[in-house]
Image (cartoon, rainbow, N blue to C red; front, side, top):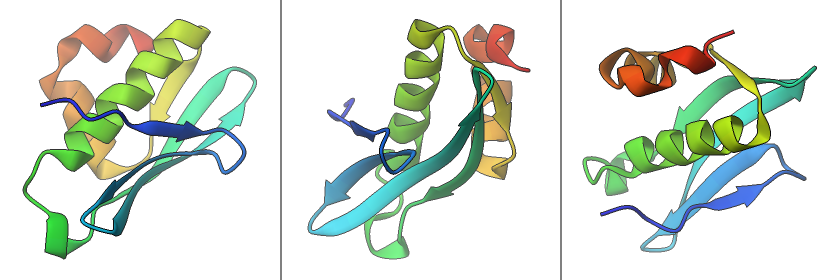
Length: 91
């Protein structure tokens, strides 16, 4: 199930609230390159595919905006390696 993830460009993050708990993917944008710096899903709501949904939404947004992606976050890096359809976004 893909969640309706909220993009908060003002905070440079994508977010989802699960059972009242904030889950985020944080990034920095510079020169049309999105550097994914952190994906955070608290343990209380872990294992539900939230990090995957956050990452997929961030990558789809990067593609639609014409951005390249630098996955400094280990989760985002592993996600892109598993989902090769996003490999063309790598900076």
